[in-house]
Length: 401
Image (cartoon, rainbow, N blue to C red):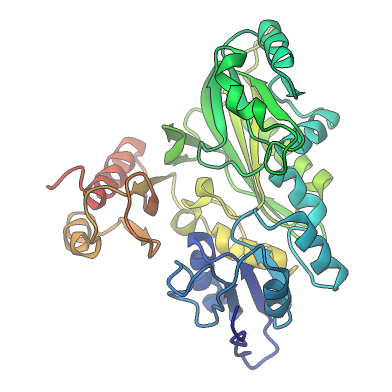
């Protein structure tokens, strides 16, 4: 990394928040930061990274380079993250230097290491799929025979958006992963196996928690996945049993408190069919300790959006009101498609639907890549879904009218 461009400090004693990683999450913190009077500084992968295009202080450096991160953190009052891939040894060094990082290394470990997450949540009595750590093909076979085939296999570290996840019908399907167990890398400590959950739908609970322990929860949402990528979020989750909503929100708040999470936490869940007692139930699928795709609806649909709330939380400011502004908000992801140039589509979308809120990430277009999202709020869920989906499809080039 070259010389760090020191962020300019605003008069009035306002702090500088450093964000490691220059992706769209860091980019979307800039608007709320401006409104709060807070300065952002971003350690970006390149000078054309999504956040670097909008944040004036965006020195270039890698999240794996301790010297670069130390030089960056020197000019920040608090450091947070655009992603969860900063190596634990770098987080440990920053904490030893006295840098305030949120979430902390100990909390972030449970989002970085799925085996550690499963062990901790199971120890807390949080509902999880049946799971096992395995190191041999025989152990894979034994687990599959026990819970029933097919099974889900996950690399404990490094997976996201369906990457690092496989459906296996036999141990032979996992030969390549099994051969790498014990080698330095995501499979060094073994392979995570889970039962294939027969679920009704996918839910997400978004929590914000501050270092002083204040916490706030947005309404439970339903997430719709296509080929392992979230394509739509319905806020709040339609026809959610009120008791289940209370149970999953309490579980997410408990996870945030027990793990010591600071900032935004997304708890992704499966709603499963009623058990013997007849009440709808859930199991936790994944954790993310940062603003999350399932919370993008809140930018326009809640009194306090997730990016403002994340900044409040990491600065230990009082948290904002997470209540929705409208009965329904639908978020539709824009995935890369046939159109390299997105801006010409704005005229059609804005003329057709002045209420649609379009957010693009300043990223190059490639098939399947998340390059933006559209939020639509209203009193009619079906109408909001149609409007958000139309705008997203038009940006992608799926429709042309």
